Length: 130
Image (cartoon, rainbow, N blue to C red; front, top):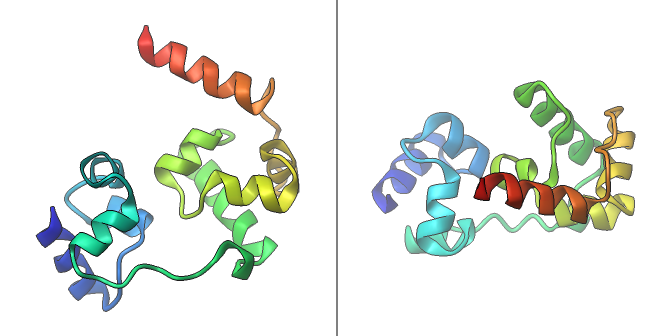
């Protein structure tokens, strides 16, 4: 897995993002997160520089564009777990910037998820257990 991260970094000329790994790599970012504890821990294990762009440096437009990209990819309104597993940014970044996940969705022109974020997360866990 480390060799695959290094291979893709060589190909891209920079440390791969989770999205780049998902689209162009052998393994999903989720596998790296499960194996190493986090994406950044996997990047460090591969002796690559960690992406240092801080959430505060991201513009609202960049965050919204990523939400819209993910919605297009999923063909539905993304949930926080979708962003965590398949997006470029942490759902926490959206919550902090926009006040809530649903407010971020609305800013991106997407329909808000039904129920609260906590209810959505709880329902996903129950679905996974079924």
